Image (cartoon, rainbow, N blue to C red; front, top):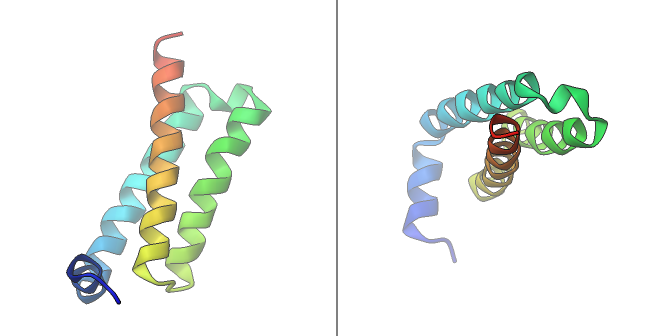
Length: 87
């Protein structure tokens, strides 16, 4: 059974997709630009969740899958971005 938050996200799907695309795409690019390009492991850690999220958006996957992928992607990007900012 779906929750009301999931129903609301499915109803406003295109608005959420625009926001997710902007946040995930820009944060991934910023993280790569700040230093993840120098390490293959960090680059893979950024690119794989970002590409999975963007692939889910293109494939019109359920919003639950898209939000899980976007959360993982933003989390990995934020951790690596903070690491590269303070080292």
